[in-house]
Length: 319
Image (cartoon, rainbow, N blue to C red; front, side, top):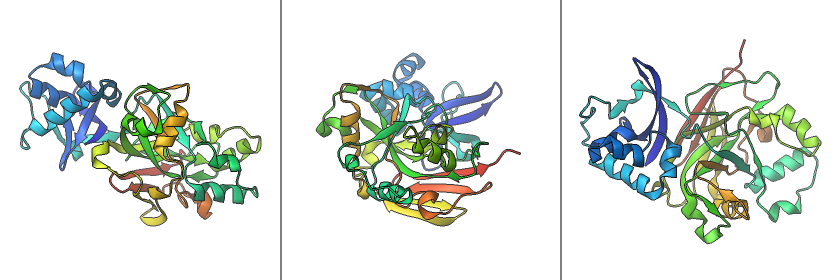
């Protein structure tokens, strides 16, 4: 399944809902489960209208959604109380799939990108990178989705994108082994780790951060794809385009550190929770910094990962 968070306009204002992407649009998860079970009370318990709530419900909640969506006749658009079960794309606005993420930790998994970064700073590749999967924690409360504008922050003149694969954690766990780690992945999505490179450069010179250079915004979307649709996450083509021109291309097979290793390391004497997001770090050539090319106000950035889809954001500089 492809699970998304969308906004719909009603006579009572805009409402945020959880949906399953189908061929022609979006199926409302909560209302569809209520229709299938013939009970809103049961639907409230097993399929709340948010991805975080669904993840916290565990396997039973996910199975209830799968069964309800499969049960829904393809021509059916409204339920017994005239509630909308299906929306066309022109009736909804996509948001980031997990607007209430618990955390966002971004790792440093692609050797080519890491090497290039140290080369540009005139520094040797640290041996420690090969010993542990390093990450930083960024602003999980500043997420945008596909189709939303990304605002050029007032404190930078070097705006950049970063092409990354990400996973969303679906179960609580602690001291998880690598062999068990994939069971904790609820799904896959695309991460654009927007960067203010001039500020980031200053932060890194004092050996702390990145902080302000990253925390102001990240793009996550367009939806979360469940693992049954991506049996091998380590063979996915990854492409970045700016205004339709391809700037970056790579493949997730080149990850030195895999998500199973990240989860095992992260959970050592610590707890991971449903709704945590883990980023892969930037694929080789997957950012303007490596290419010495810089996006400008008005540019449209599109990140595409095989099996997931396309996330697009236009860069807007406030007047």
